[in-house]
Length: 68
Image (tube, rainbow, N blue to C red; front, side, top):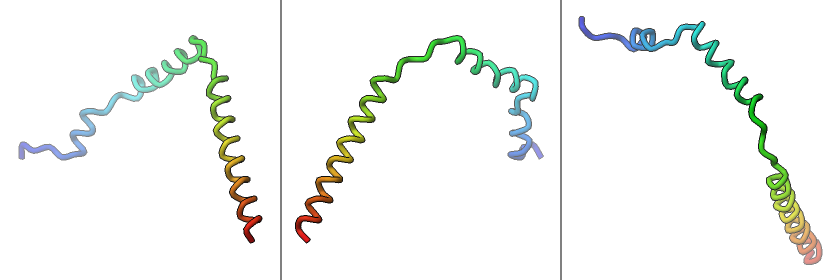
């Protein structure tokens, strides 16, 4: 009789709704107060990688057409 079920364990560990609601709004406030880093370098790297993939694909496609 001393054993607890998984549901009872879950109920004991549950956070009250009022506490979880206040914690959920806190990260949004922190996100707006800090300035976001510039992603220009990331954008350039993605564009270069995409360009390389497109050029490679086109080269293989032209090679395929030339051999048929």
